[in-house]
Image (cartoon, rainbow, N blue to C red):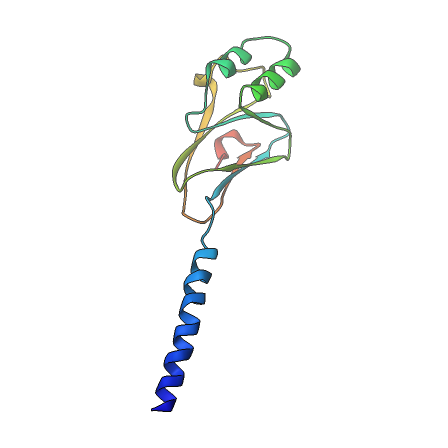
Length: 136
């Protein structure tokens, strides 16, 4: 009887700490990591993130100013070999990208897309490769 009482007391002491431990281990939102594997600058927009300021920044101008304006408007510019980490919700996402190897884009219709799925609690890496048909 004393043995059962002792086991019950231990269970009562451990149970709250197990619940607390479960709460503290909850994962944050996952990240979508985009890596530029090209030798060129790459413009990146996640999901439906295009806005009017970005579109204005895409109008032909000085390319260096254009990249700065694109970033100021909320876009991301990746240098060769650089990565960017975006906090996203689990689910389907689209990475819109434009490789600046032959001029600048006229608008979102010039961007290529990579469709991917991010699982809950897991980061997802997406690579933009030098072989533009092999972006994944």
